[in-house]
Image: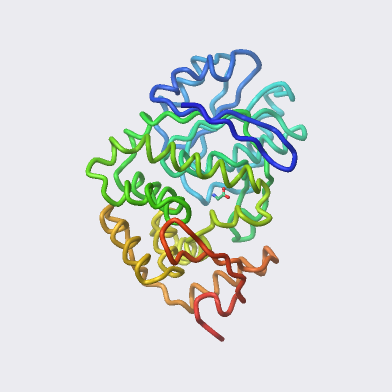
Length: 334
Ligand code: GLY
């Protein structure tokens, strides 16, 4: 299946290809020609980046260690130095083969090298396939704040091969599913029911990925640069990021976001989301106090200087946006 995403207000389009075996078609999809830097990490099976490098030819693979802490300034500058040392020019390209960390970092490198070179994204985790690989958000973490330095920079193409998910652990797969739960909870009760009632996730995955992408495309086409509607995609993330940071690596991103969603919903919705999280062996309660989480949220807010927009879900398939004071965000006052 192919989707086309058109950004706004500056109109540019790119294709999102969802197809079993698409990785092996990277040559015909991307096109041979030019030099490619393939960015990947040590947690991604090396065969994926090698496959892409072999098909495209004239490629160099750059591997960073796995983990969010590597989405940092040192790696950004190290990759830029590598591009300069190896004579990359504006007609060459950067290809991300990995999860959200790799996509964010590769996209940011592509946006800054020579004022922007071509960027292709081949997401290999469920989380990045259903969410972070499309929409053009690129970033690195800085001064202890996640994604504080970055750019909106759209890929030339996103290639999604559901077969690469076969090498993920159940934990990683289920963590990634949370981003699909987020799309379903805010926009599509049928998708939510599909995830809720699925008896064989691997059989339903392609439908889940495709529907999540259709929903995300609809949001990004209306509000590419997150002036309004796109904030809905942060459902569960304000508290989720705080849980992720406070727990210092104990939780995967999706696990933290799943728990974060439970803070802002009606009792009925909380019950349904909790059941889904439990069905996929995801945590539903964290040991970190509201006061402690509020400190992390305040730290992020101070650095970003933006108001806190909370997304609340009172009925599956719909949402409300509320602007709240940082001290009130978790019902905690200093
Ligand atoms: N992952 C949230 C967004 O793309 O806006």
